[in-house]
Every structure is written in structure tokens, then in C-alpha cells.
Length: 375
Image 1 (cartoon, rainbow, N blue to C red):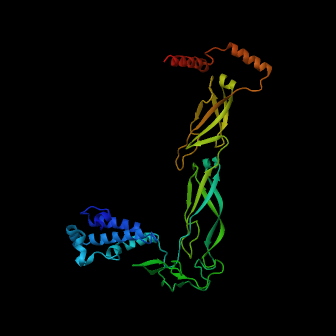
Image 2: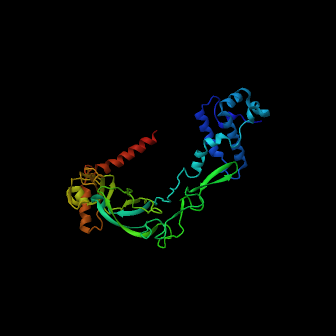
Image 3: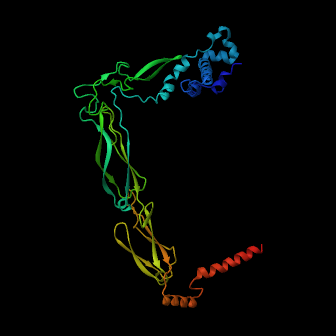
């Protein structure tokens, strides 16, 4: 039994022309034989889709089908229904084959092709990201051939129009029910051929060479930033426009500073006596200046001190982040006999007020588990 035309196209009865064509286009692209070579089921499905659309897109045929169903086209009625290569398929021929052939991205008749984009990885220091710099890099790339001026033809000669496609870069070939347009196999879509190629570039119109380029790295640039140098990529074929060069930056990890956006973090070890009695120390910031940090009496391990405006500059803004100094209290090692005696004496003289956190911690832990066991 023949399937319902509306169900075949996945639409409701009463669908308008725009939605009907959209549904047909989607299914035709999915089941087209060229996209499913050797698949008999897809070819059969494609024929059903085309027949359904041919019928429903015609107002008279659609009215007859809505009233009588498939019987309207039996015994020659309404000219026997749709043909496989009818107008329905031609309505979307360009849409389907435009996508199948690369979305209409044809080469120009002059054979000029844009060069490829290039990537260059560069590692910089955190100090360089802080201050900015102008870097010189050497990039191996393709440049336009000087002998043939990028044409690819031997000096004194010119490329000629392709005899197979007459310069269009496309040829038509019969395939089944259709005449399909494809890239010209002789000129590869360029529309021109070179009888006498340039000896220097072998007809490519470009040669490989290492170039020196200057790259401006602004202050405050972050790890992973991409810098685009327009027209500094690979030269195009046969005088085509060049591509772009992309510089991918990575910032080398610093020995003392860790970065989080515009802020910097630095962990500084201090002695137990400095933490207990108070004192100060100096740190060198990324701009090379010295900053003094005051340590109050009784400073605990992990305490942070904020140095406002001593962090990283924000890219292309007047704002500067902050520097956070985190203290790491160092426990004395390799004690002498006298040092040990003094610490033992200090321990005897210590009270809960000297170490409130440790004194209270164990009592709170004990109370917690005792109350937990009573539940």
C-alpha cells in the first residue's frame, strides 16, 4: 500500500508552500543517492519524497489528492503523478548540490586562491606580560614568487584558459536522472592551466622562505591570548591574497608569583619568632621595586597581606591588580641544646592564652564525640 504523501514528507495537511518546500529540502538532502551511494533503500525513499512533493506543491494535484487520495492518479488520472526528475527537485537543485559541492565556495576564474592561516606558539615570562614588549620572531612561510610575480607561469608567458571548462572551473556530467556540475578535473577549478610553469616555484606562484616579523605584546596580556597579524600568513596561489598569522601566547610559570587575572599571589616563609613577636620583611615586586610588609605580633600561618596596586596591569586599561602575600610560618629545625632548653622552658611557661586555637580544639573535639555517642 502506498504511503500517505503528507506522512512521507512529515507535514500536516494544510501545510503552506514554504514549510512544504522546507520539509522536502531537508529530506531530499538526507536521502539523495549521491550522499548514500549503493544504498537502494535511500534511493527508493528519495523517489517517494520527490513524488510526494511533486504532487502536493501543485495546487490542482493537491486538491485532487486531498479529495480522492492516490486513486486520483490511477489509470492516467492527473497525468499519472510525479516524475522522478520533475520540477520539485529542480527547485532545490542549487541548495542541495551547493552544500554537497562545498557550499558554493568556487575558485575564481583567475585561479587566485587565498593563502592558509599560520600559527606560531610563543612563550613569554610573567615579567614580560607585566611590562609588555616588542618581540622579533622568525616564521617559515610561503611568499609570492618574485620570478613570476605569483602567476605560476614561466617569465614571459601567461596562464591560458582551460580548454575543458572554458575558464568556468566547473564541468557538467550526466549521472542517472541528473546533470551534475563538478569541479573541472583538468584545471582543478581554477579556470586556467599553465603550459610553461615557472622553474623557481614549479607553477605554484609561491616559494617557502623564513621571514622576520615584529610582534607587539601589550602589558597585561594573559596566558592563552591569541594575536592576529593580518596578511602575514601563507601567500595565496597565483597571486591570491595571503592568509593571516596567529600568535598563540603562553606565559611561563613564575618561580615566586602565581597569577589570577590581575592579581598576584606570593607565599613567603617567616620564622616562628617573627610570627610570634612581630617584625617585617621586604619582597621584590614585578616592577623591580621593594615593598615592605609589616608582620603584627601573633601572626598565624597562612595569613594574607594585601599590597594594593602591586599586581598585574589590566589589558588596555589603567587598572592594576593587587599583590597578596601569604605567610608560611616555619618551624625551627636542627636545634642546639640551648635552643631546645629555651623552647622547653617556654612550653612550661605557656598558657591557653598563648595558643587559644590548639588549646580549644581538642576539648571541642572531645565534647563533640561524647555528645555524638549519647545520640
